[in-house]
Image: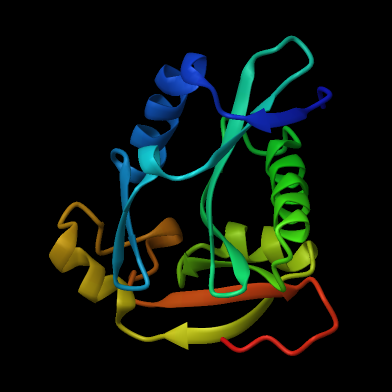
Length: 168
């Protein structure tokens, strides 16, 4: 595994980000918790490998006493980019005084559930039918997800960053 460094995205990253978002989400738009986001308009962290090559990206927003990970994707599984990006996002959240790091994934994404839970995030809510509702705003969302699991629901995961109680 190559050494991964994380930095804020810059103008030179636009093509790599566009290609990654096209591969992962079918373009720059995602619909999550009944909200449509343009990933190009949100703060983005970029992972680069030891040779300076693009290895992944994390798009986030600070709101509701937390840092929401809106998108996290690596160019290749197991390259260390996802872990490095998540750690960098936690540092951004902590510096901003955020009380939690949180995100939403879908019921079919067992790989993501495994990844996030191994890094201390816990499932705190399930929104049945959220993906069905999102399909109205983004019809390209498939009906079958990973492993041919019907894609219907969103799962919210979070990790508290402070000792104080945080409301969902």
